[in-house]
Length: 293
Image 1: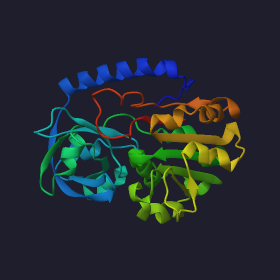
Image 2: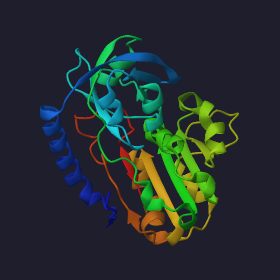
Image 3: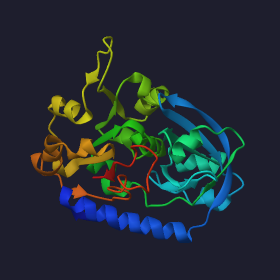
Image 4: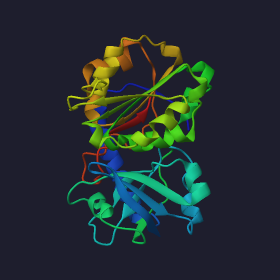
């Protein structure tokens, strides 16, 4: 994928949203849907569910997933519209085990809500994986990009899991950290994976916006937690990945860091940013703001 430089300014987002929604509408008219059974549905955190779909009998579907950060559409017979979902498992899991794994936020009345109420053996329909995913070549080789900052909130951790477990040379870099925000620990998925992610070279910084009295870690929002670290980064050797609620990226101090504070040039590979406020998307907050910088 060709890298390009851009400026992130709010006035460009509505145009991006309308163009992307129009493109999505066209895709729905022409795309191929493949039936696949659910392998499992289980709680991941409050209002979040692990959903695993068996694609072992659909080799073309499994083979379409080649890069962390890709997504697909899922539809159900009783749902009015399909849902766009990020694939949480890395491509290697599809190749070796024949499953796609997802982290789904259950929102009342949505396709995602209906999906979370199904069980093993129930059949859904999927499109092939879409998008180009995170272009990790933009932060390669590791020795040239020693610092990588990852920011995720809520169910936005889903494609970040895929990125981390796919591998991007984190253990060959001096400072790779994930600022992961949630309301409280009950709403924070993948806590059981933190040790494994740390062993891959990613420092995990949980940030709770409404912690209980026993919490001693970072509190507030991820952009504030990052600011409190007061760490200086070189623009020439730093990459950043964002995935979560758009308020995170729209924070003025946060943008000041990304765009002006350290003069970091944005290497953008947007694949669904700016679309979530339309009725085309009902899968939670995973796509409020997604991109690699």
